[in-house]
Image (cartoon, rainbow, N blue to C red; front, side, top):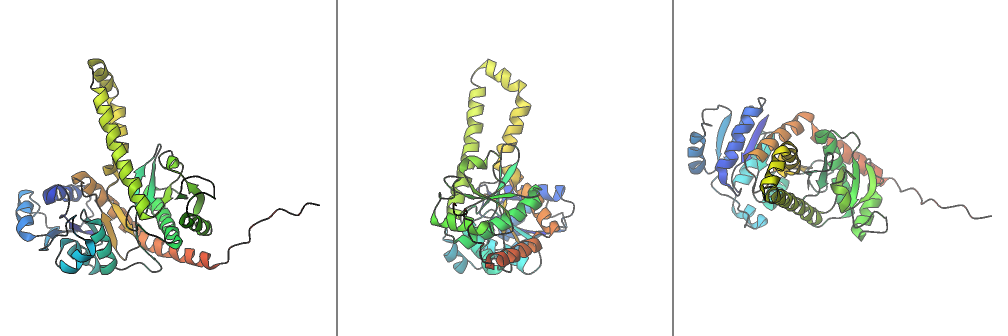
Length: 350
């Protein structure tokens, strides 16, 4: 597997992400090449310091410009033609890499990927698929923030792609797909969610109807579908809650010698809970529906999330998930072209 990694744009600087690259090379023996993208004068000394230049699999790909978090994505892509994010995506487009990884500006990565790579056949809009923990496992959120405004057809395709992703990565045989709403009754929701739910039930997925916020972390759904505006709020709220709970536990369990002793006895279970609640455990989020694999790592991510993203990229590439997405989208298009069956009605009383 060959990777292209944009190490610019993250909150903790390129050295932290290069440490993640180093861990990935150590863990994944199947990696044949890692293209590290960014300003050569900055990255060269860092590669020397981390002894990465000695690894023949590592190659520095210069890019003189960086799209920052404060940049307007569309404007930055037009003006910064030699940006690290574009050069990274071009390595996938030109066949030098099997997957791209970036922790930079999400809007620029999404727009640049659509322009440089294009969409898979039949895909209306790519979507960000985020894995989040539940009580006994994990679930997939689509869309995680790429598409703040959507049509019903977009949500249906998000559900189809998210279902295929959950089967491949989470190993769920028949993922339950729900449309996020403010209640489980069909009359709830908005015009968008009601139309999407109607079409989702005709698509080749295990559509369970609406799902509520309560279902997300209590094993009530495997794939939660919503527009990117709502999805990003769900994602950031979940991450914030996880950090708050970990902070409260630490504060309360160290408040007295007795509590410290109890925490010491329970440290194995507490450590496991912290791991399950930590979003870094699942790595970056793929942009499903592109002609090439692109993974978005959180801007605040350190080396461990990048390592897990490398694992995830390998799995997606090896499983040939892109071909599955094309097939599932084609099946969905055919199913939605078929007229919906008439609504059932009770027989007239005698």
